[in-house]
Length: 184
Ligand code: ZN
Image (cartoon, rainbow, N blue to C red):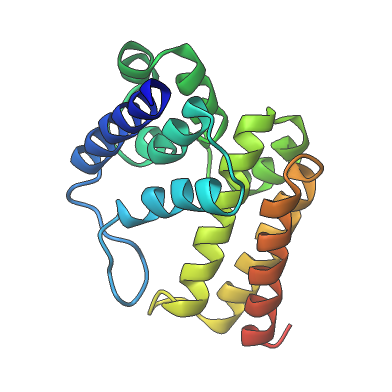
């Protein structure tokens, strides 16, 4: 019971922090959902599909886009959530000083060097993103761009495999759906 309470408390703390950081952001999809829906979805996928109960992984999932997409710093995450959470978020964060194409290339190159926790967060992230792109494609994305995204995401996940069979199977299911929907 105590353990459950600790987990709930630490997750709620992360959700509140991420919700405040992402408060003015919307998702790219046609429905312009509040950004926070996405990190919550990633954590929920880890919990339900991956059956992950590790506090660090779940907190990192909630926080995974805060450094990349808001003014949050790694120091701030370390102070509030500890070094382990900070490290997983860092592993899920692209280097924003690099051009977009290079960042995408590096995600593929670096995938096979990620920690087991970061792999889980990254696969769940790709499940969430691919699902969103099929359900509510960004209005300004061409069919070609969607195809490119689907194939790139497949390459990244290829490097993350081998540790989380249930998440990998869920990714494969959404990938098959995405490929079908774009005629790949
Ligand atoms: Zn994300």
